[in-house]
Length: 193
Image (cartoon, rainbow, N blue to C red; front, top):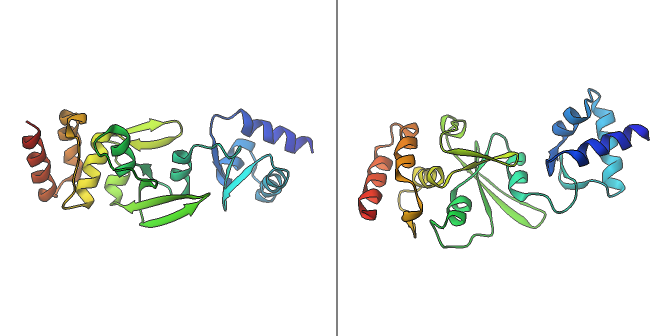
Protein backbone atom coordinates (compact mmCIF):
# COMPACT_ATOMS: atom_id res chain seq x y z
CA UNK A 1 0.00 0.00 0.00
CA UNK A 2 2.86 2.44 0.73
CA UNK A 3 4.21 1.72 -2.76
CA UNK A 4 0.87 2.71 -4.30
CA UNK A 5 0.66 5.95 -2.27
CA UNK A 6 4.19 6.90 -3.25
CA UNK A 7 3.45 6.10 -6.88
CA UNK A 8 0.25 8.15 -7.01
CA UNK A 9 1.97 11.22 -5.56
CA UNK A 10 4.57 11.01 -8.34
CA UNK A 11 1.81 11.15 -10.95
CA UNK A 12 -0.11 13.92 -9.18
CA UNK A 13 3.01 16.11 -8.90
CA UNK A 14 3.78 15.68 -12.59
CA UNK A 15 2.69 18.51 -14.86
CA UNK A 16 1.50 15.95 -17.44
CA UNK A 17 -2.28 15.57 -17.55
CA UNK A 18 -2.22 12.35 -19.62
CA UNK A 19 -0.08 9.24 -19.14
CA UNK A 20 0.45 6.13 -21.19
CA UNK A 21 1.29 2.85 -19.50
CA UNK A 22 4.89 3.40 -20.57
CA UNK A 23 4.92 6.93 -19.09
CA UNK A 24 3.71 5.59 -15.75
CA UNK A 25 6.29 2.79 -15.75
CA UNK A 26 9.06 5.32 -16.36
CA UNK A 27 7.80 7.77 -13.73
CA UNK A 28 7.48 4.97 -11.17
CA UNK A 29 10.87 3.56 -12.14
CA UNK A 30 9.13 0.22 -12.45
CA UNK A 31 10.69 -2.60 -14.46
CA UNK A 32 7.93 -5.03 -13.47
CA UNK A 33 4.96 -4.46 -15.78
CA UNK A 34 2.70 -6.59 -13.55
CA UNK A 35 3.35 -4.29 -10.60
CA UNK A 36 2.66 -1.24 -12.77
CA UNK A 37 -0.57 -2.79 -14.05
CA UNK A 38 -1.64 -3.64 -10.50
CA UNK A 39 -0.97 -0.06 -9.37
CA UNK A 40 -2.83 1.44 -12.31
CA UNK A 41 -5.77 -0.96 -11.86
CA UNK A 42 -5.95 -0.07 -8.15
CA UNK A 43 -5.97 3.69 -8.82
CA UNK A 44 -8.55 3.42 -11.59
CA UNK A 45 -10.77 1.21 -9.42
CA UNK A 46 -10.57 3.64 -6.48
CA UNK A 47 -11.21 6.65 -8.74
CA UNK A 48 -7.79 8.22 -8.22
CA UNK A 49 -6.83 7.80 -11.88
CA UNK A 50 -9.13 8.22 -14.86
CA UNK A 51 -8.92 5.73 -17.73
CA UNK A 52 -9.50 7.57 -21.00
CA UNK A 53 -8.74 4.68 -23.34
CA UNK A 54 -6.97 1.36 -23.06
CA UNK A 55 -3.41 2.06 -21.95
CA UNK A 56 -3.95 5.83 -21.54
CA UNK A 57 -4.84 7.47 -18.23
CA UNK A 58 -5.34 10.92 -16.74
CA UNK A 59 -5.26 12.43 -13.26
CA UNK A 60 -8.96 13.27 -13.67
CA UNK A 61 -11.55 14.14 -16.34
CA UNK A 62 -10.06 17.63 -16.77
CA UNK A 63 -7.12 16.43 -18.87
CA UNK A 64 -5.70 18.30 -21.87
CA UNK A 65 -7.40 16.76 -24.92
CA UNK A 66 -4.61 17.98 -27.23
CA UNK A 67 -2.03 16.20 -25.06
CA UNK A 68 -4.21 13.09 -25.16
CA UNK A 69 -4.51 13.30 -28.97
CA UNK A 70 -0.75 12.94 -29.37
CA UNK A 71 -0.57 9.96 -26.99
CA UNK A 72 -2.88 7.68 -28.98
CA UNK A 73 -0.49 7.29 -31.92
CA UNK A 74 3.13 8.39 -31.77
CA UNK A 75 4.83 10.12 -33.38
CA UNK A 76 2.11 12.69 -34.01
CA UNK A 77 1.36 16.36 -33.62
CA UNK A 78 -1.73 18.57 -33.43
CA UNK A 79 -2.22 20.46 -36.67
CA UNK A 80 -4.42 21.10 -39.69
CA UNK A 81 -7.83 22.71 -39.01
CA UNK A 82 -7.35 22.60 -35.23
CA UNK A 83 -4.40 25.01 -35.47
CA UNK A 84 -5.78 27.05 -38.37
CA UNK A 85 -9.08 27.72 -36.58
CA UNK A 86 -7.29 28.76 -33.38
CA UNK A 87 -5.08 31.13 -35.39
CA UNK A 88 -8.06 32.68 -37.23
CA UNK A 89 -6.92 31.47 -40.66
CA UNK A 90 -10.18 29.55 -41.15
CA UNK A 91 -13.51 30.48 -39.60
CA UNK A 92 -15.23 27.10 -39.78
CA UNK A 93 -15.71 25.51 -36.36
CA UNK A 94 -14.65 21.89 -36.04
CA UNK A 95 -15.47 19.88 -32.94
CA UNK A 96 -12.85 17.29 -33.88
CA UNK A 97 -9.17 17.52 -33.08
CA UNK A 98 -6.98 17.06 -36.16
CA UNK A 99 -3.64 15.33 -35.78
CA UNK A 100 -0.79 14.50 -38.18
CA UNK A 101 0.31 10.88 -37.83
CA UNK A 102 1.79 7.90 -39.65
CA UNK A 103 -1.70 6.53 -40.35
CA UNK A 104 -5.23 7.66 -41.14
CA UNK A 105 -7.81 6.97 -38.43
CA UNK A 106 -10.80 8.49 -36.73
CA UNK A 107 -11.05 7.73 -33.02
CA UNK A 108 -13.84 8.61 -30.62
CA UNK A 109 -12.72 8.70 -27.00
CA UNK A 110 -14.47 10.21 -24.02
CA UNK A 111 -17.10 11.80 -26.28
CA UNK A 112 -14.61 13.63 -28.52
CA UNK A 113 -13.52 12.78 -32.07
CA UNK A 114 -9.84 12.70 -33.02
CA UNK A 115 -9.03 12.70 -36.73
CA UNK A 116 -5.57 11.38 -37.69
CA UNK A 117 -4.26 12.21 -41.13
CA UNK A 118 -1.34 10.36 -42.61
CA UNK A 119 1.66 12.32 -43.81
CA UNK A 120 4.93 10.83 -44.97
CA UNK A 121 7.51 10.02 -42.27
CA UNK A 122 10.05 12.62 -43.43
CA UNK A 123 7.44 15.36 -42.80
CA UNK A 124 6.05 13.82 -39.63
CA UNK A 125 9.44 13.74 -37.95
CA UNK A 126 10.66 17.09 -39.28
CA UNK A 127 10.33 19.75 -36.57
CA UNK A 128 10.38 22.76 -38.91
CA UNK A 129 7.47 24.99 -37.96
CA UNK A 130 6.64 22.97 -34.85
CA UNK A 131 5.99 24.27 -31.34
CA UNK A 132 6.30 22.34 -28.11
CA UNK A 133 3.17 23.12 -26.12
CA UNK A 134 2.67 21.64 -22.67
CA UNK A 135 3.98 18.10 -23.33
CA UNK A 136 2.85 17.73 -26.92
CA UNK A 137 3.90 18.93 -30.34
CA UNK A 138 1.73 21.36 -32.26
CA UNK A 139 2.18 22.79 -35.72
CA UNK A 140 2.58 26.53 -36.03
CA UNK A 141 -0.17 28.15 -38.13
CA UNK A 142 2.32 28.33 -41.00
CA UNK A 143 3.15 24.62 -40.78
CA UNK A 144 -0.55 23.73 -40.47
CA UNK A 145 -1.26 25.82 -43.59
CA UNK A 146 1.44 23.94 -45.53
CA UNK A 147 0.30 20.53 -44.24
CA UNK A 148 -3.27 21.28 -45.36
CA UNK A 149 -2.00 22.24 -48.82
CA UNK A 150 0.14 19.09 -48.88
CA UNK A 151 -2.95 16.91 -48.41
CA UNK A 152 -5.51 18.99 -50.33
CA UNK A 153 -5.39 20.24 -53.91
CA UNK A 154 -8.22 22.70 -53.37
CA UNK A 155 -8.79 24.30 -49.97
CA UNK A 156 -10.40 27.56 -48.93
CA UNK A 157 -8.66 29.72 -46.33
CA UNK A 158 -10.61 32.63 -44.86
CA UNK A 159 -7.86 34.94 -43.53
CA UNK A 160 -4.32 34.55 -44.84
CA UNK A 161 -3.21 37.81 -43.21
CA UNK A 162 -2.73 35.88 -39.96
CA UNK A 163 0.19 33.96 -41.47
CA UNK A 164 3.87 34.90 -41.42
CA UNK A 165 4.91 34.41 -45.06
CA UNK A 166 8.62 34.51 -44.25
CA UNK A 167 8.06 31.45 -42.02
CA UNK A 168 6.03 29.74 -44.74
CA UNK A 169 8.81 30.14 -47.30
CA UNK A 170 11.34 29.00 -44.69
CA UNK A 171 9.37 25.76 -44.02
CA UNK A 172 8.32 25.10 -47.64
CA UNK A 173 11.56 23.26 -48.69
CA UNK A 174 10.73 20.27 -46.44
CA UNK A 175 7.96 19.45 -48.95
CA UNK A 176 10.55 19.01 -51.71
CA UNK A 177 9.27 17.48 -54.90
CA UNK A 178 5.78 18.96 -54.53
CA UNK A 179 5.70 21.49 -57.35
CA UNK A 180 1.89 21.72 -57.19
CA UNK A 181 2.13 22.81 -53.58
CA UNK A 182 4.85 25.36 -54.26
CA UNK A 183 2.73 26.88 -57.06
CA UNK A 184 -0.27 27.07 -54.70
CA UNK A 185 1.78 28.79 -52.00
CA UNK A 186 3.10 31.36 -54.48
CA UNK A 187 -0.45 31.95 -55.81
CA UNK A 188 -1.82 32.49 -52.27
CA UNK A 189 1.09 34.83 -51.54
CA UNK A 190 0.35 36.93 -54.64
CA UNK A 191 -3.37 37.07 -53.74
CA UNK A 192 -2.64 38.47 -50.30
CA UNK A 193 -0.53 41.30 -51.77
